[in-house]
Amino acid sequence: MSKSNTAFLAVIVTVLTGSLIINPQASLEASTRGLEMWWEVVFPSLLPFFIASDLLISLRVVHFIGILLEPLMRPLFRVPGVGGFVWAMGMASGFPSGAKLSARLRSDNQLTQIEAERLVSFTNSSSPLFIFGAVAVGFFHNPDLGMILAVSHYSSNVATGLIMRFHGSTNTMTKQRRKHVSIGKIFQAFQQKHPKETRPLGKLLGDAIASSIQTLLVIGGFIILFSVLNKMLELLHITALIIPIIQYLLELLQLPSSFGNAIISGIFEITLGNHLTSQAEATLFQQTMVASFLLAFSGLSVQAQVASILAETDIRFLPYFFARVLQSILAPIATFLLWGPLYENKDVLHYKGTGIPVLAQPLPDGFVFFHTYGPLVTLFFLYVYLFLLFRKKG
Image 1 (cartoon, rainbow, N blue to C red):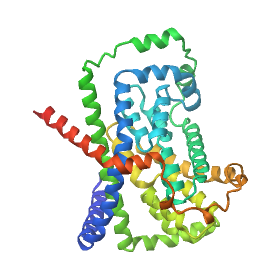
Image 2: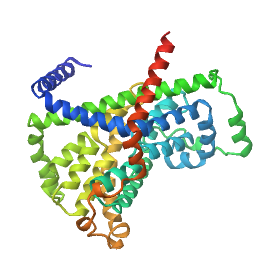
Image 3: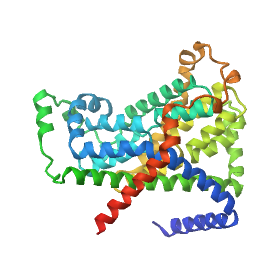
Image 4: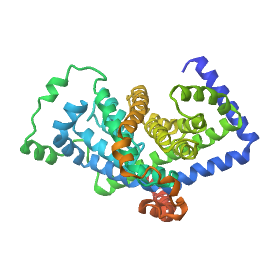
């Protein structure tokens, strides 16, 4: 890091630390809000996916799946078939599963650097639980809105992957594309013993749990940090200085200036941004366009989580950031094109005005489970992590 960058970073951290000292109550409230999100939902929802995926990679099941999906993933996205597993797991569990799995496969040399950069660019997406439960039902009080948000989000994600396939060299594409897959090759690959894997099942499980929890602890730190940072920027009136620029851009796009606070908050943290978007004075169509933009960009909080995971490998962060900007352009376009077929023609345009308040309607089953048992799951596995950690050091 250069001296100028170090000095600039030192000034930023000093100002942030000073604001924390001056505003301890606001800092505590913002930290608590971020901690509750991680404690109740993020940790218990992501942990099973992280542990399962780690075990599947260690047991070479992912390699078996990769050979099956090679004819699909290689021509479309120019990544090996194992990318299909990462894509599916990232879509099911949400941020930042795609980055974690891509980094793990890169560490195991199942992906080249360029292939990993292509893969991570489109395998980090919002989970269906977040889109349908938190955004559509929780914020907009409109379950029907979840379908257009999800289709726009995942279709723009696929489009981003198709564009990012041109990232990097094209020298090996033709040779790799011509590979044929036979049933004999599939089972032969599945039966091959991993030359580096000599751990017993108990050790495999313990390492998977420890690695997953360690990653989730880092994710929790970023969630809390950006929750506090967003609040401090508001108290230091820095947000107020940026709002006129955002409002000018909104006017160019013929969108209400009331989205200013929502977009600034969403650039930092996706959940708060979507919440404010649902409260902005605008039509439902305009709110959905902005929500689609924020879901695609995913927020600097999520991007920082991805950057911390990629930093352990040679996978560069810049292609991932470019992909997020690209998807944040494609997603609102998809929403604009799909609004009529998926929403307007269903005769539910006025649903929001006559809808039931969110607290009066049942939450999705997943959210009920996490709200009730999420903290217990988190606490139990933290104890397991401490046990494994002390046992390893002992």
